[in-house]
Amino acid sequence: MRTKVFTLIITGLLAFAGNPLNAQDMKESLIPQLSAFPTGDKNPEENARYFIGQSYLAPLTPDAVTGTLVYNVTFEPACRNNWHRHTSGQILIVVGGKGYYQEKGKPARILIPGDVVEIAPDIVHWHGAAPDSWFSHLALTPNAPGNKTTWLDPVDDKLYAAATERGKGDKVKGYFSTLATTDPELYDIISNFAFTETQQYVNLDIRTRIMVTMASAIGMNAQAEYRQTLYNALANGITPVEIKEVLYHAVPYAGMAKVADLINIANEVLTENGVSLPLTPQAVVTPETRQEKGLAFQKSIFGEQIDKLYETSPAGQLHIQQFLSANCFGDYQTRPTLDVKMRELLTYSILISLGGCEPQVKGHIQGNINVGNDKATLLSVTTQLLPYIGYPRTLNAIACLNEIIPEK
Image (tube, rainbow, N blue to C red; front, side):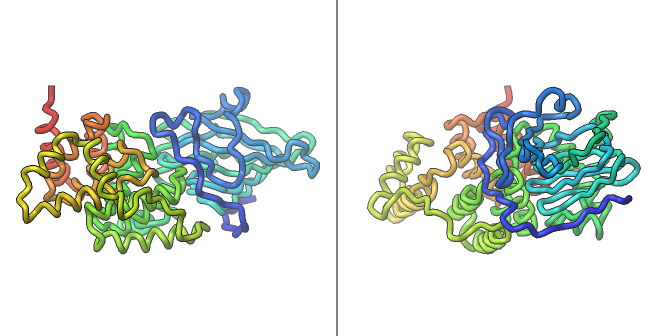
């Protein structure tokens, strides 16, 4: 029997608005809830020894009164199980994130929410998360007499890299799926560079990688790339409110003319995934308090430098400084969804992606340092964005970094 992969529409099955990843260490405490089903606890050792990476298990039918055991299995990025087989077969229903399924001797297939995999008895296979995404599926296993799972060899890093690379172009939403078909040579080059080579030098958690790439795409009005980051964001527990907040944060830096088209794309993708609009308001200032609170926020990052800007500004230009305080910082940055460290990383990402903003890049490098983002973090962000913004803007950003924070 051949394995069949097809898409079902299951009302109420999918819910993407999960908890965000812990930005400090996604392996501890907080993990994204990728669907309406519970994530459960870490896989017990008797199962975990057959997995590479961390997985979580939530039993959904402990009594198995229908003769079928159902579990929600969640994999951290790049986690996968060993090659194995079931004497009575198995069914997988994908409920969150992005993952892969592969049978022995066949190419890997990418899996996204709504996909169902029917695995025939005694078919040797493995399944797990994509390198850049959490992944969750329901596993339905017949509780028949004599049913047995036989665990085989691990899926090592080399095999996993080859399998997931081959499967990237299959059913991936966004421009990568088109490139894989129309321009396979370019697809191979950019995929290897963006997802393998540069990542050796990027020391950022997945949530931060996605957020800064999203901000960069907004700064460049890169609509195809922005749409791609939305799918990755939802697959990794970044909430609709956070997605919208990155857009709002970009308005005073990139300008509303660039952001407007991307707001429409975000609304389209969120609506597709069952998110009701508009979202809950996040503003904490009023017309009467925005100047005062914005100025205070500015000073919390840049200190006395803000007073000097006010003091040295020509009278006819003072209104620009006031706009920066009330609008850029008061209207946008006082919103509580994102903390100040993330906001400064987003600002840096937008500015280096815009190009021609080197004075502002230098100012916000210092702002990042002031709020606790070190040079290594900023260099990681720059490296993460290199495949998307190109070498000239990347080298300009590094020149600014080295000027403000000289190499030891």
